[in-house]
Length: 330
Image (cartoon, rainbow, N blue to C red; front, side, top):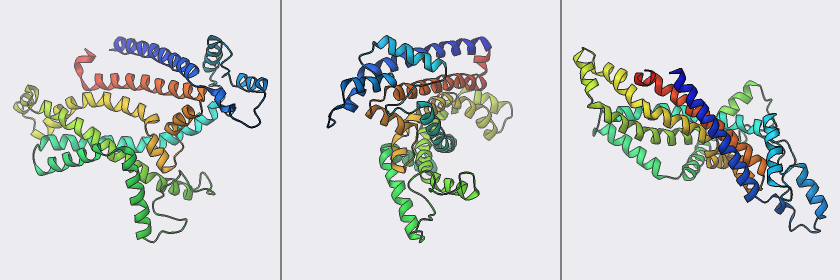
């Protein structure tokens, strides 16, 4: 088992190095930081533009290999370089990672747990009213683009505030930002205020995750309901509910472990619309803005971050797979 996990970790580590290197080379060759200085009136001196681009290691006149070597040396020392605005990428990174983590941790975990429970319940009660209601809910949510879903929740929050008479600065549910400006960062009022800001964007992720995982879990559970090992467990005296939970649900969770691990990793840059609409300045917004600004170092840093997350997700999914399926441990 340990050999298997170490081999997988080594394989995934190689993939991180390759994917990150390719991402930097693509960003450095396809993005054009020099365009930031074009069209200005009066135009800046070419020497000044070259000096500014040299300072942030984005001068297209410098050989690509030399730029990559300088960037890689910084990464190995924990420095992701400078942004297109000549500010440290590390500072922007630290702030935005925790913004996305606060948003995704609750929304994704709660949505996944509800989706797994709903999918398993629907499979056990196949074609009954509860199953049909859950199926209808999933199909409706999955057919709505996430940007539309976020706007619907934002409008619903605004309508609820107006209905309950929260028309001033203090609201029951906030539709923009992470916290109301002016509050002491570590005070109780700030904690409550952050929760009020967190409700609506979290609900968007919860509903979307619940619909997604609910469909997959229902199908996975249906595949094992008629299996021989469940009939054997019942024949040995286990009750139906215990056999379904201990043997059926555990087996059906095996593919879900992989889905959840990779989905959570990719959501760090995949919740762009939710972050944009609710004014959360997280990693998804940062990645889109970096591409728009032709910010090579920021794009490469976000790509490296996602690659490491995928590595961790892959390793954790292997561990979860081994925990759920004894055959892997053997």
